[in-house]
Length: 164
Image 1 (cartoon, rainbow, N blue to C red):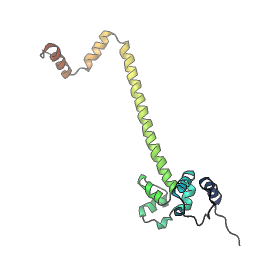
Image 2: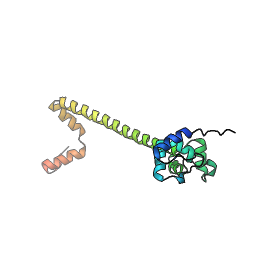
Image 3: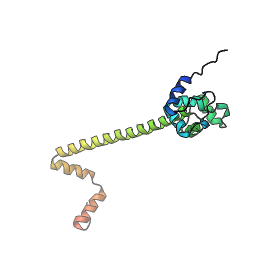
Image 4: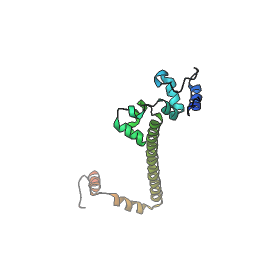
């Protein structure tokens, strides 16, 4: 009789040696409740895929039909992240976390690029303004004035509104 070797045994041993000084336990019998939380967290950090393969709750034992469907379809929503962690689907939860981080980074990068474009337009406008003669500047300023600006200026300088 030959005993078949667990396909993840070598990975498990390598990770275990990094997280614990204790002898390597039987991979078939280990449960996440048997491990100190810091050791479990370290193991998840080193190899979330291995941790998921060893510690995840079987899909049929999960009491959330929507989560079961998402796991079976390997198609997750942002709201699934905490539930996945609770059921030991660490690698899947990590994928969601990475997607969130990427989304936020893309959003920041987009805002930075928009800011650069605005700054470039402002720089070009300043250069154009500096190259103008006094008459051209006065003409540009008069285009920007609204009727309210004209009335306010007349009130400020003359104390009344003149004929416009």
